[in-house]
Amino acid sequence: MTTDNLSIQIFRWISTLEAISFLVLLFIAMPLKYIWEIPEYVRIIGMAHGILFILYLLGGFWMFKKLNWSVKTLFIVFLSSILPFGPFVVERRYLPKS
Image (cartoon, rainbow, N blue to C red; front, side, top):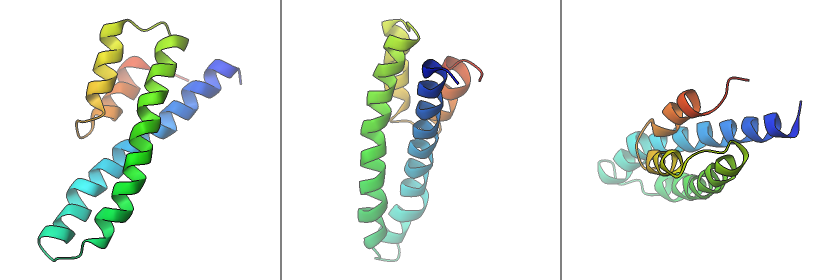
């Protein structure tokens, strides 16, 4: 496996984990906090999601350089980080097949 392929695989993993953590935060942890008054999960999942979010943005910038993306593509990748299911779309549309 080349260095480029390894970088892409790492970004895929971060992207997938970031998207899943966001969905868990939105659809499990937040309802637990606001409906059943159990805030602990928001702190735990929120922290994990925050770290993954930052890694996703850094990885997106890294892919911008590695894959010679346009600034428009980079903007779309960054924008997708705040949309549920957005990173899944980025993986399929902007990353080369491995």
